[in-house]
Length: 296
Length: 296
Image 1 (spheres, rainbow over the protein chains, first blue to last red):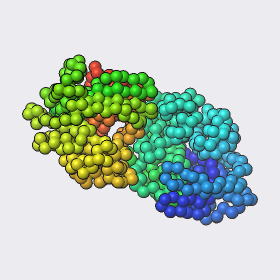
Image 2 (cartoon, rainbow over the protein chains, first blue to last red; image 1 turned 45 degrees about the vertical axis):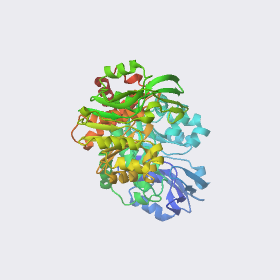
Image 3 (cartoon, rainbow over the protein chains, first blue to last red; image 1 turned 30 degrees about the horizontal axis):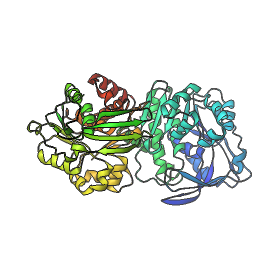
Image 4 (spheres, chains in turn green, red; image 1 turned 120 degrees about the vertical axis):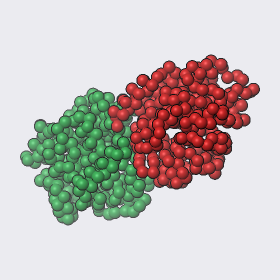
Protein backbone atom coordinates (compact mmCIF):
# COMPACT_ATOMS: atom_id res chain seq x y z
CA UNK A 1 0.00 0.00 0.00
CA UNK A 2 3.01 2.33 -0.03
CA UNK A 3 3.94 5.03 -2.53
CA UNK A 4 7.41 6.04 -3.65
CA UNK A 5 7.63 9.74 -4.48
CA UNK A 6 10.64 10.97 -6.43
CA UNK A 7 11.11 14.72 -6.72
CA UNK A 8 12.57 17.90 -5.36
CA UNK A 9 12.86 18.93 -1.73
CA UNK A 10 13.59 22.60 -1.27
CA UNK A 11 13.29 25.87 0.58
CA UNK A 12 11.06 28.48 -1.00
CA UNK A 13 10.68 32.25 -0.80
CA UNK A 14 7.16 33.02 -1.98
CA UNK A 15 5.27 36.27 -2.49
CA UNK A 16 1.56 36.29 -3.31
CA UNK A 17 -0.97 39.13 -3.24
CA UNK A 18 -1.88 37.96 0.28
CA UNK A 19 1.55 37.82 1.90
CA UNK A 20 4.95 36.18 1.77
CA UNK A 21 7.11 33.50 3.38
CA UNK A 22 10.88 32.97 3.45
CA UNK A 23 12.78 29.67 3.44
CA UNK A 24 9.55 27.71 3.68
CA UNK A 25 9.59 23.97 3.16
CA UNK A 26 8.71 23.10 -0.43
CA UNK A 27 9.56 20.95 -3.43
CA UNK A 28 7.42 18.58 -5.46
CA UNK A 29 8.25 15.50 -3.38
CA UNK A 30 7.36 17.26 -0.12
CA UNK A 31 4.00 18.57 -1.32
CA UNK A 32 3.08 15.26 -2.96
CA UNK A 33 4.08 13.20 0.08
CA UNK A 34 2.28 15.46 2.53
CA UNK A 35 -0.86 14.98 0.42
CA UNK A 36 -0.36 11.22 -0.12
CA UNK A 37 0.24 10.46 3.58
CA UNK A 38 -3.52 10.76 4.20
CA UNK A 39 -3.98 7.53 2.25
CA UNK A 40 -0.78 5.51 2.38
CA UNK A 41 2.87 5.59 3.51
CA UNK A 42 4.91 7.82 1.20
CA UNK A 43 8.63 7.21 0.74
CA UNK A 44 10.44 10.36 -0.39
CA UNK A 45 13.37 9.85 -2.75
CA UNK A 46 15.10 13.23 -2.72
CA UNK A 47 18.20 15.15 -1.77
CA UNK A 48 18.90 18.16 0.47
CA UNK A 49 22.02 20.02 1.53
CA UNK A 50 23.67 20.11 4.92
CA UNK A 51 21.86 23.41 5.58
CA UNK A 52 18.45 21.71 5.58
CA UNK A 53 16.72 22.48 8.90
CA UNK A 54 16.36 19.40 11.06
CA UNK A 55 12.87 20.38 12.20
CA UNK A 56 11.63 19.71 8.66
CA UNK A 57 13.02 16.17 8.85
CA UNK A 58 11.28 15.70 12.18
CA UNK A 59 8.02 17.07 10.83
CA UNK A 60 8.10 14.72 7.80
CA UNK A 61 8.92 11.78 10.05
CA UNK A 62 6.20 12.63 12.51
CA UNK A 63 3.70 12.77 9.65
CA UNK A 64 4.39 9.19 8.67
CA UNK A 65 6.67 9.88 5.73
CA UNK A 66 9.44 7.36 5.23
CA UNK A 67 12.85 8.99 4.67
CA UNK A 68 15.08 6.00 3.94
CA UNK A 69 15.60 7.33 0.41
CA UNK A 70 16.17 10.88 1.62
CA UNK A 71 19.79 11.90 0.96
CA UNK A 72 21.58 14.68 2.87
CA UNK A 73 24.63 15.86 0.93
CA UNK A 74 27.36 18.37 1.71
CA UNK A 75 26.32 21.67 0.13
CA UNK A 76 23.21 23.81 -0.08
CA UNK A 77 19.56 22.78 -0.40
CA UNK A 78 17.60 23.55 -3.57
CA UNK A 79 16.12 27.03 -3.28
CA UNK A 80 13.34 28.60 -5.29
CA UNK A 81 12.04 32.12 -5.08
CA UNK A 82 8.88 33.13 -6.87
CA UNK A 83 6.01 35.55 -6.86
CA UNK A 84 2.44 35.51 -8.04
CA UNK A 85 0.92 38.73 -9.37
CA UNK A 86 -2.16 36.83 -10.31
CA UNK A 87 -2.73 33.47 -8.71
CA UNK A 88 -2.59 31.48 -11.93
CA UNK A 89 1.04 32.16 -12.89
CA UNK A 90 4.22 31.91 -10.84
CA UNK A 91 7.07 34.22 -11.80
CA UNK A 92 10.39 32.57 -10.93
CA UNK A 93 12.76 35.11 -9.40
CA UNK A 94 15.58 32.73 -8.50
CA UNK A 95 16.34 29.03 -8.85
CA UNK A 96 19.44 27.74 -7.07
CA UNK A 97 19.71 23.98 -7.55
CA UNK A 98 22.42 23.38 -4.93
CA UNK A 99 22.90 19.65 -4.32
CA UNK A 100 19.69 18.94 -6.29
CA UNK A 101 21.74 19.70 -9.42
CA UNK A 102 23.60 16.43 -8.84
CA UNK A 103 20.55 14.45 -7.71
CA UNK A 104 21.01 10.73 -8.30
CA UNK A 105 17.70 9.08 -7.41
CA UNK A 106 18.39 5.69 -5.89
CA UNK A 107 15.47 3.57 -4.78
CA UNK A 108 16.27 1.82 -1.48
CA UNK A 109 16.05 -1.96 -1.55
CA UNK A 110 12.89 -2.07 0.58
CA UNK A 111 11.10 0.29 -1.84
CA UNK A 112 11.67 -1.91 -4.87
CA UNK A 113 8.47 -3.67 -3.93
CA UNK A 114 6.43 -0.59 -3.03
CA UNK A 115 2.93 -0.51 -4.40
CA UNK A 116 3.04 2.65 -6.50
CA UNK A 117 5.42 5.26 -7.82
CA UNK A 118 4.99 8.96 -8.48
CA UNK A 119 7.65 10.49 -10.69
CA UNK A 120 7.56 14.14 -9.67
CA UNK A 121 8.43 16.97 -12.01
CA UNK A 122 12.20 16.43 -12.47
CA UNK A 123 14.51 15.93 -15.46
CA UNK A 124 13.16 13.11 -17.66
CA UNK A 125 16.61 11.48 -17.60
CA UNK A 126 16.25 11.09 -13.83
CA UNK A 127 12.70 9.81 -14.23
CA UNK A 128 14.02 7.19 -16.67
CA UNK A 129 16.78 6.26 -14.25
CA UNK A 130 14.16 5.56 -11.59
CA UNK A 131 12.07 3.49 -13.98
CA UNK A 132 15.14 1.37 -14.80
CA UNK A 133 15.50 0.45 -11.12
CA UNK A 134 11.98 -0.84 -10.59
CA UNK A 135 10.21 -3.76 -12.18
CA UNK A 136 7.00 -4.67 -10.47
CA UNK A 137 5.09 -1.52 -9.53
CA UNK A 138 1.34 -1.71 -9.68
CA UNK A 139 0.72 1.91 -10.72
CA UNK A 140 3.24 4.47 -11.97
CA UNK A 141 2.28 8.13 -12.36
CA UNK A 142 4.35 10.87 -13.94
CA UNK A 143 4.23 14.63 -13.55
CA UNK A 144 6.19 17.02 -15.76
CA UNK A 145 6.20 20.63 -16.99
CA UNK A 146 6.51 22.79 -20.11
CA UNK A 147 10.26 23.23 -19.50
CA UNK A 148 10.94 19.54 -20.19
CA UNK A 149 8.51 19.40 -23.10
CA UNK A 150 10.43 22.24 -24.74
CA UNK A 151 13.93 21.05 -23.89
CA UNK A 152 13.77 17.26 -23.51
CA UNK A 153 10.77 16.11 -25.48
CA UNK A 154 12.39 12.96 -26.83
CA UNK A 155 13.53 11.78 -23.40
CA UNK A 156 10.18 12.71 -21.88
CA UNK A 157 8.41 10.63 -24.53
CA UNK A 158 10.55 7.66 -23.45
CA UNK A 159 9.33 8.18 -19.88
CA UNK A 160 5.68 8.56 -20.88
CA UNK A 161 5.77 5.24 -22.76
CA UNK A 162 6.57 3.46 -19.51
CA UNK A 163 3.99 4.95 -17.11
CA UNK A 164 0.32 4.31 -16.36
CA UNK A 165 -0.86 7.82 -15.50
CA UNK A 166 0.30 11.12 -17.00
CA UNK A 167 -0.39 14.40 -15.19
CA UNK A 168 -0.24 17.49 -17.42
CA UNK A 169 -2.09 20.77 -17.65
CA UNK A 170 -4.03 21.86 -20.73
CA UNK A 171 -1.17 23.86 -22.25
CA UNK A 172 1.23 20.97 -21.72
CA UNK A 173 -0.87 18.28 -23.41
CA UNK A 174 -1.38 20.59 -26.37
CA UNK A 175 2.30 21.54 -26.50
CA UNK A 176 3.48 17.93 -26.28
CA UNK A 177 1.13 16.58 -28.94
CA UNK A 178 0.59 19.60 -31.18
CA UNK A 179 -3.15 18.99 -30.89
CA UNK A 180 -5.56 21.89 -30.50
CA UNK A 181 -7.95 20.27 -28.04
CA UNK A 182 -7.32 18.21 -24.94
CA UNK A 183 -9.30 15.22 -26.18
CA UNK A 184 -7.23 14.83 -29.32
CA UNK A 185 -4.11 15.40 -27.26
CA UNK A 186 -5.15 12.73 -24.76
CA UNK A 187 -5.76 10.24 -27.58
CA UNK A 188 -2.19 10.76 -28.77
CA UNK A 189 -0.82 10.35 -25.25
CA UNK A 190 -2.85 7.16 -24.72
CA UNK A 191 -1.27 5.76 -27.89
CA UNK A 192 2.15 6.10 -26.24
CA UNK A 193 1.04 3.45 -23.79
CA UNK A 194 -0.32 5.32 -20.76
CA UNK A 195 -3.68 4.15 -19.41
CA UNK A 196 -4.94 7.43 -17.97
CA UNK A 197 -4.25 11.05 -18.93
CA UNK A 198 -5.15 13.56 -16.24
CA UNK A 199 -5.52 17.03 -17.73
CA UNK A 200 -5.40 19.74 -15.07
CA UNK A 201 -7.40 22.88 -15.80
CA UNK A 202 -6.70 25.07 -12.78
CA UNK A 203 -9.82 26.78 -11.46
CA UNK A 204 -11.87 24.71 -13.92
CA UNK A 205 -10.90 21.39 -12.39
CA UNK A 206 -9.48 18.36 -14.14
CA UNK A 207 -10.43 15.75 -16.72
CA UNK A 208 -9.26 12.16 -16.53
CA UNK A 209 -9.27 10.46 -19.91
CA UNK A 210 -8.96 6.71 -20.32
CA UNK A 211 -9.27 4.39 -23.30
CA UNK A 212 -13.05 4.20 -22.93
CA UNK A 213 -14.12 6.94 -20.51
CA UNK A 214 -13.91 10.54 -19.43
CA UNK A 215 -14.27 11.85 -15.92
CA UNK A 216 -14.79 15.57 -15.48
CA UNK A 217 -14.12 16.99 -12.01
CA UNK A 218 -14.66 20.56 -10.92
CA UNK A 219 -12.06 22.38 -8.86
CA UNK A 220 -12.98 22.54 -5.19
CA UNK A 221 -14.21 26.13 -4.74
CA UNK A 222 -11.59 27.93 -2.66
CA UNK A 223 -12.84 31.38 -1.80
CA UNK A 224 -9.46 32.72 -0.75
CA UNK A 225 -6.40 31.27 -2.45
CA UNK A 226 -3.38 32.22 -0.33
CA UNK A 227 -0.53 30.44 -2.12
CA UNK A 228 -0.92 28.23 -5.21
CA UNK A 229 2.58 26.74 -4.87
CA UNK A 230 2.46 22.94 -4.88
CA UNK A 231 -1.16 22.62 -6.01
CA UNK A 232 -0.23 20.29 -8.88
CA UNK A 233 2.06 18.24 -6.64
CA UNK A 234 -0.68 17.86 -4.01
CA UNK A 235 -3.12 16.84 -6.72
CA UNK A 236 -0.75 14.15 -7.97
CA UNK A 237 0.10 13.11 -4.40
CA UNK A 238 -3.55 12.77 -3.39
CA UNK A 239 -4.35 10.93 -6.62
CA UNK A 240 -1.47 8.47 -6.37
CA UNK A 241 -1.81 8.08 -2.61
CA UNK A 242 -5.44 7.02 -2.95
CA UNK A 243 -4.62 4.83 -5.95
CA UNK A 244 -1.94 2.99 -3.96
CA UNK A 245 -4.78 1.57 -1.83
CA UNK A 246 -6.71 0.27 -4.85
CA UNK A 247 -6.41 -2.76 -7.13
CA UNK A 248 -7.93 -1.69 -10.40
CA UNK A 249 -7.48 1.34 -12.61
CA UNK A 250 -11.20 1.41 -13.47
CA UNK A 251 -13.34 4.50 -13.97
CA UNK A 252 -14.66 4.53 -10.39
CA UNK A 253 -11.16 4.30 -8.93
CA UNK A 254 -9.89 7.04 -11.22
CA UNK A 255 -12.91 9.21 -10.34
CA UNK A 256 -12.19 8.87 -6.63
CA UNK A 257 -8.48 9.51 -7.21
CA UNK A 258 -9.20 12.72 -9.14
CA UNK A 259 -11.58 13.93 -6.43
CA UNK A 260 -9.07 13.18 -3.67
CA UNK A 261 -6.34 14.94 -5.67
CA UNK A 262 -8.66 17.91 -6.09
CA UNK A 263 -9.40 18.03 -2.36
CA UNK A 264 -5.71 17.89 -1.43
CA UNK A 265 -4.83 20.70 -3.86
CA UNK A 266 -7.60 22.89 -2.42
CA UNK A 267 -6.51 22.27 1.18
CA UNK A 268 -2.96 23.18 0.20
CA UNK A 269 -3.65 26.48 -1.59
CA UNK A 270 -5.61 27.84 1.37
CA UNK A 271 -2.37 28.60 3.25
CA UNK A 272 1.30 29.30 2.56
CA UNK A 273 3.78 26.50 1.90
CA UNK A 274 2.64 23.16 3.38
CA UNK A 275 1.05 24.75 6.45
CA UNK A 276 -2.44 23.40 5.77
CA UNK A 277 -1.16 19.89 5.10
CA UNK A 278 0.21 19.61 8.63
CA UNK A 279 -1.97 18.11 11.30
CA UNK A 280 -4.94 17.23 9.10
CA UNK A 281 -6.35 13.71 8.99
CA UNK A 282 -8.26 11.40 6.69
CA UNK A 283 -11.54 12.34 8.38
CA UNK A 284 -11.20 15.97 7.26
CA UNK A 285 -10.07 14.87 3.80
CA UNK A 286 -13.08 12.57 3.49
CA UNK A 287 -15.45 15.31 4.65
CA UNK A 288 -14.16 17.56 1.85
CA UNK A 289 -14.32 14.66 -0.61
CA UNK A 290 -17.96 14.04 0.26
CA UNK A 291 -18.71 17.74 -0.05
CA UNK A 292 -17.13 17.84 -3.50
CA UNK A 293 -18.99 14.68 -4.51
CA UNK A 294 -22.28 16.36 -3.56
CA UNK A 295 -21.59 19.14 -6.05
CA UNK A 296 -21.32 16.96 -9.15
CA UNK B 1 -46.04 22.41 -19.55
CA UNK B 2 -45.45 25.17 -22.12
CA UNK B 3 -42.67 27.75 -22.30
CA UNK B 4 -42.92 31.33 -23.51
CA UNK B 5 -39.70 32.51 -25.16
CA UNK B 6 -39.22 36.24 -25.71
CA UNK B 7 -36.29 37.30 -27.84
CA UNK B 8 -34.91 38.15 -31.25
CA UNK B 9 -35.67 36.42 -34.53
CA UNK B 10 -33.24 37.25 -37.28
CA UNK B 11 -31.23 36.41 -40.33
CA UNK B 12 -27.51 35.92 -39.80
CA UNK B 13 -24.40 36.03 -41.96
CA UNK B 14 -21.77 34.02 -40.12
CA UNK B 15 -18.13 33.25 -40.89
CA UNK B 16 -16.19 30.77 -38.79
CA UNK B 17 -12.82 29.09 -39.42
CA UNK B 18 -14.76 26.17 -40.88
CA UNK B 19 -17.02 27.95 -43.35
CA UNK B 20 -19.78 30.51 -43.70
CA UNK B 21 -23.52 30.93 -44.18
CA UNK B 22 -25.63 33.83 -45.46
CA UNK B 23 -29.11 34.87 -44.32
CA UNK B 24 -29.36 31.87 -42.06
CA UNK B 25 -32.18 31.67 -39.55
CA UNK B 26 -31.05 32.92 -36.16
CA UNK B 27 -31.93 35.04 -33.15
CA UNK B 28 -32.10 34.17 -29.47
CA UNK B 29 -35.78 33.20 -29.50
CA UNK B 30 -35.29 30.84 -32.44
CA UNK B 31 -32.28 29.04 -30.98
CA UNK B 32 -33.88 28.77 -27.54
CA UNK B 33 -37.21 27.52 -28.91
CA UNK B 34 -35.60 24.98 -31.20
CA UNK B 35 -33.77 23.61 -28.15
CA UNK B 36 -36.79 23.79 -25.82
CA UNK B 37 -39.15 22.01 -28.24
CA UNK B 38 -37.53 18.70 -27.30
CA UNK B 39 -39.14 18.99 -23.87
CA UNK B 40 -42.23 21.21 -24.12
CA UNK B 41 -44.18 23.47 -26.45
CA UNK B 42 -42.36 26.77 -26.93
CA UNK B 43 -44.28 29.94 -27.80
CA UNK B 44 -42.08 32.48 -29.55
CA UNK B 45 -42.79 36.12 -28.79
CA UNK B 46 -40.84 37.97 -31.46
CA UNK B 47 -41.03 40.16 -34.51
CA UNK B 48 -39.82 39.85 -38.11
CA UNK B 49 -40.11 42.01 -41.22
CA UNK B 50 -42.13 41.37 -44.34
CA UNK B 51 -38.94 40.02 -45.96
CA UNK B 52 -38.83 37.05 -43.59
CA UNK B 53 -38.79 33.83 -45.67
CA UNK B 54 -42.00 31.88 -45.29
CA UNK B 55 -40.15 28.54 -45.22
CA UNK B 56 -38.73 29.52 -41.82
CA UNK B 57 -42.25 30.02 -40.48
CA UNK B 58 -43.22 26.63 -41.86
CA UNK B 59 -40.13 24.99 -40.35
CA UNK B 60 -40.84 26.47 -36.88
CA UNK B 61 -44.47 25.42 -37.12
CA UNK B 62 -43.61 21.92 -38.23
CA UNK B 63 -41.26 21.59 -35.27
CA UNK B 64 -44.05 22.22 -32.80
CA UNK B 65 -43.28 25.85 -32.05
CA UNK B 66 -46.32 28.01 -31.37
CA UNK B 67 -46.26 31.28 -33.33
CA UNK B 68 -49.35 33.08 -31.99
CA UNK B 69 -47.08 35.72 -30.48
CA UNK B 70 -44.97 35.97 -33.62
CA UNK B 71 -45.45 39.38 -35.21
CA UNK B 72 -44.76 40.10 -38.90
CA UNK B 73 -44.34 43.86 -39.47
CA UNK B 74 -43.83 45.96 -42.57
CA UNK B 75 -40.08 46.49 -42.92
CA UNK B 76 -36.93 44.43 -42.73
CA UNK B 77 -36.04 41.57 -40.42
CA UNK B 78 -33.28 41.93 -37.82
CA UNK B 79 -29.95 41.08 -39.43
CA UNK B 80 -26.68 40.24 -37.77
CA UNK B 81 -23.39 39.60 -39.42
CA UNK B 82 -20.45 38.25 -37.46
CA UNK B 83 -17.28 36.28 -37.68
CA UNK B 84 -15.26 34.10 -35.35
CA UNK B 85 -11.48 34.12 -35.65
CA UNK B 86 -11.27 31.92 -32.62
CA UNK B 87 -14.38 30.07 -31.59
CA UNK B 88 -14.75 31.76 -28.21
CA UNK B 89 -15.40 35.31 -29.41
CA UNK B 90 -17.81 36.64 -32.00
CA UNK B 91 -16.81 39.80 -33.82
CA UNK B 92 -19.93 41.73 -34.86
CA UNK B 93 -19.53 43.09 -38.39
CA UNK B 94 -23.03 44.48 -38.80
CA UNK B 95 -26.20 44.78 -36.73
CA UNK B 96 -29.31 46.03 -38.52
CA UNK B 97 -32.25 45.99 -36.13
CA UNK B 98 -34.96 46.55 -38.73
CA UNK B 99 -38.43 46.06 -37.23
CA UNK B 100 -36.82 44.54 -34.11
CA UNK B 101 -35.83 48.12 -33.19
CA UNK B 102 -39.52 48.77 -32.48
CA UNK B 103 -40.24 45.41 -30.87
CA UNK B 104 -43.17 45.59 -28.51
CA UNK B 105 -43.44 42.21 -26.83
CA UNK B 106 -47.08 41.37 -26.25
CA UNK B 107 -47.95 38.10 -24.59
CA UNK B 108 -51.03 36.57 -26.26
CA UNK B 109 -53.96 35.89 -23.95
CA UNK B 110 -53.53 32.12 -24.07
CA UNK B 111 -49.89 32.44 -23.01
CA UNK B 112 -50.66 34.33 -19.83
CA UNK B 113 -51.07 30.96 -18.15
CA UNK B 114 -48.07 29.24 -19.72
CA UNK B 115 -45.94 27.25 -17.37
CA UNK B 116 -42.60 29.01 -17.77
CA UNK B 117 -41.00 32.06 -19.31
CA UNK B 118 -37.56 32.61 -20.80
CA UNK B 119 -36.59 36.24 -21.20
CA UNK B 120 -34.02 36.08 -23.99
CA UNK B 121 -31.19 38.54 -24.33
CA UNK B 122 -33.07 41.76 -25.22
CA UNK B 123 -33.26 45.29 -23.75
CA UNK B 124 -34.07 45.08 -20.03
CA UNK B 125 -36.90 47.57 -20.55
CA UNK B 126 -38.58 45.03 -22.84
CA UNK B 127 -37.90 42.24 -20.37
CA UNK B 128 -39.60 44.36 -17.67
CA UNK B 129 -42.52 45.02 -19.98
CA UNK B 130 -43.03 41.27 -20.40
CA UNK B 131 -42.82 40.70 -16.66
CA UNK B 132 -45.53 43.31 -16.12
CA UNK B 133 -47.93 41.35 -18.34
CA UNK B 134 -47.65 38.04 -16.53
CA UNK B 135 -48.60 37.14 -13.01
CA UNK B 136 -48.59 33.43 -12.36
CA UNK B 137 -45.64 31.82 -14.05
CA UNK B 138 -44.09 28.88 -12.30
CA UNK B 139 -40.49 29.49 -13.41
CA UNK B 140 -39.00 32.60 -15.02
CA UNK B 141 -35.48 32.56 -16.46
CA UNK B 142 -33.54 35.54 -17.76
CA UNK B 143 -30.61 35.75 -20.16
CA UNK B 144 -28.65 38.95 -20.76
CA UNK B 145 -25.25 40.18 -21.99
CA UNK B 146 -22.39 42.55 -21.13
CA UNK B 147 -23.91 45.28 -23.37
CA UNK B 148 -26.90 45.68 -21.04
CA UNK B 149 -24.77 45.40 -17.90
CA UNK B 150 -22.67 48.30 -19.17
CA UNK B 151 -25.51 50.44 -20.51
CA UNK B 152 -28.63 49.54 -18.53
CA UNK B 153 -27.44 48.12 -15.24
CA UNK B 154 -30.15 49.76 -13.13
CA UNK B 155 -32.98 48.51 -15.36
CA UNK B 156 -31.37 45.08 -15.59
CA UNK B 157 -31.21 44.91 -11.79
CA UNK B 158 -34.97 45.57 -11.73
CA UNK B 159 -35.47 42.58 -14.05
CA UNK B 160 -33.16 40.30 -12.07
CA UNK B 161 -35.12 40.99 -8.87
CA UNK B 162 -38.21 39.49 -10.47
CA UNK B 163 -36.86 36.25 -11.96
CA UNK B 164 -36.07 32.77 -10.62
CA UNK B 165 -33.09 31.84 -12.77
CA UNK B 166 -30.33 34.11 -14.08
CA UNK B 167 -28.12 32.98 -16.97
CA UNK B 168 -24.81 34.83 -17.23
CA UNK B 169 -21.27 33.95 -18.21
CA UNK B 170 -18.30 34.33 -15.87
CA UNK B 171 -17.32 37.78 -17.11
CA UNK B 172 -20.90 39.00 -16.81
CA UNK B 173 -21.47 37.91 -13.19
CA UNK B 174 -18.19 39.55 -12.23
CA UNK B 175 -18.98 42.73 -14.19
CA UNK B 176 -22.48 43.02 -12.74
CA UNK B 177 -21.47 42.47 -9.12
CA UNK B 178 -17.90 43.78 -9.05
CA UNK B 179 -16.87 40.51 -7.39
CA UNK B 180 -13.64 38.77 -8.37
CA UNK B 181 -14.91 35.20 -8.18
CA UNK B 182 -18.10 33.60 -9.44
CA UNK B 183 -19.15 32.31 -6.02
CA UNK B 184 -19.08 35.73 -4.41
CA UNK B 185 -20.83 37.12 -7.47
CA UNK B 186 -23.53 34.46 -7.28
CA UNK B 187 -24.12 35.25 -3.60
CA UNK B 188 -24.77 38.88 -4.54
CA UNK B 189 -27.13 37.88 -7.34
CA UNK B 190 -29.03 35.50 -5.05
CA UNK B 191 -29.54 38.39 -2.66
CA UNK B 192 -31.42 40.22 -5.41
CA UNK B 193 -34.08 37.53 -5.16
CA UNK B 194 -33.20 34.96 -7.82
CA UNK B 195 -33.22 31.32 -6.73
CA UNK B 196 -30.61 29.95 -9.12
CA UNK B 197 -27.63 31.56 -10.81
CA UNK B 198 -26.30 29.65 -13.80
CA UNK B 199 -22.75 30.72 -14.60
CA UNK B 200 -21.69 29.66 -18.08
CA UNK B 201 -17.99 28.93 -18.57
CA UNK B 202 -17.77 28.06 -22.26
CA UNK B 203 -15.58 25.02 -22.92
CA UNK B 204 -15.34 24.51 -19.14
CA UNK B 205 -19.06 23.93 -18.70
CA UNK B 206 -21.41 25.65 -16.29
CA UNK B 207 -22.04 26.01 -12.57
CA UNK B 208 -25.53 26.32 -11.11
CA UNK B 209 -25.51 28.02 -7.74
CA UNK B 210 -28.49 27.97 -5.41
CA UNK B 211 -29.03 29.12 -1.84
CA UNK B 212 -27.67 25.85 -0.45
CA UNK B 213 -25.99 23.97 -3.29
CA UNK B 214 -23.63 24.03 -6.23
CA UNK B 215 -23.84 21.89 -9.31
CA UNK B 216 -20.79 21.76 -11.56
CA UNK B 217 -21.35 20.49 -15.10
CA UNK B 218 -18.68 19.94 -17.73
CA UNK B 219 -19.18 21.09 -21.29
CA UNK B 220 -20.15 18.27 -23.60
CA UNK B 221 -16.93 17.52 -25.48
CA UNK B 222 -17.46 18.67 -29.07
CA UNK B 223 -14.47 17.64 -31.15
CA UNK B 224 -15.30 19.93 -34.05
CA UNK B 225 -17.10 23.17 -33.26
CA UNK B 226 -18.50 24.49 -36.53
CA UNK B 227 -20.46 27.57 -35.40
CA UNK B 228 -20.83 28.73 -31.78
CA UNK B 229 -23.68 31.13 -32.60
CA UNK B 230 -26.68 30.49 -30.36
CA UNK B 231 -24.89 28.19 -27.89
CA UNK B 232 -26.00 30.27 -24.90
CA UNK B 233 -29.56 30.51 -26.23
CA UNK B 234 -29.74 26.75 -26.75
CA UNK B 235 -28.39 26.21 -23.25
CA UNK B 236 -31.09 28.45 -21.78
CA UNK B 237 -33.75 26.92 -24.05
CA UNK B 238 -32.83 23.36 -23.09
CA UNK B 239 -32.65 24.33 -19.41
CA UNK B 240 -36.00 26.14 -19.34
CA UNK B 241 -37.69 23.62 -21.67
CA UNK B 242 -36.83 20.78 -19.32
CA UNK B 243 -37.72 22.86 -16.26
CA UNK B 244 -41.17 23.58 -17.70
CA UNK B 245 -41.95 19.87 -17.23
CA UNK B 246 -40.94 19.88 -13.57
CA UNK B 247 -42.59 21.03 -10.32
CA UNK B 248 -39.73 21.85 -8.00
CA UNK B 249 -36.59 23.93 -8.38
CA UNK B 250 -34.56 21.46 -6.30
CA UNK B 251 -30.93 20.47 -6.85
CA UNK B 252 -31.79 17.34 -8.85
CA UNK B 253 -34.09 19.28 -11.18
CA UNK B 254 -31.50 22.01 -11.66
CA UNK B 255 -28.81 19.39 -12.31
CA UNK B 256 -30.89 17.76 -15.02
CA UNK B 257 -31.76 21.15 -16.49
CA UNK B 258 -28.08 22.16 -16.68
CA UNK B 259 -27.18 18.85 -18.32
CA UNK B 260 -29.98 19.16 -20.87
CA UNK B 261 -28.94 22.75 -21.57
CA UNK B 262 -25.37 21.56 -22.06
CA UNK B 263 -26.49 18.83 -24.45
CA UNK B 264 -28.56 21.24 -26.54
CA UNK B 265 -25.71 23.74 -26.81
CA UNK B 266 -23.33 21.00 -27.96
CA UNK B 267 -25.75 19.70 -30.57
CA UNK B 268 -26.17 23.24 -31.87
CA UNK B 269 -22.50 24.20 -32.23
CA UNK B 270 -21.75 21.10 -34.30
CA UNK B 271 -23.32 22.72 -37.39
CA UNK B 272 -24.06 26.18 -38.81
CA UNK B 273 -27.14 28.13 -37.74
CA UNK B 274 -29.90 25.88 -36.39
CA UNK B 275 -29.16 23.05 -38.84
CA UNK B 276 -28.45 20.45 -36.14
CA UNK B 277 -31.57 21.36 -34.16
CA UNK B 278 -33.82 20.37 -37.05
CA UNK B 279 -35.16 16.86 -37.20
CA UNK B 280 -33.69 15.64 -33.92
CA UNK B 281 -35.86 14.10 -31.26
CA UNK B 282 -35.96 13.55 -27.51
CA UNK B 283 -34.48 10.09 -27.91
CA UNK B 284 -31.25 11.51 -29.34
CA UNK B 285 -31.22 14.27 -26.73
CA UNK B 286 -31.64 11.71 -23.94
CA UNK B 287 -28.87 9.52 -25.38
CA UNK B 288 -26.50 12.50 -25.22
CA UNK B 289 -27.76 13.41 -21.76
CA UNK B 290 -27.02 9.88 -20.52
CA UNK B 291 -23.60 9.98 -22.15
CA UNK B 292 -22.81 13.27 -20.40
CA UNK B 293 -24.12 11.90 -17.10
CA UNK B 294 -21.73 8.96 -17.41
CA UNK B 295 -18.77 11.36 -17.54
CA UNK B 296 -19.38 13.06 -14.19
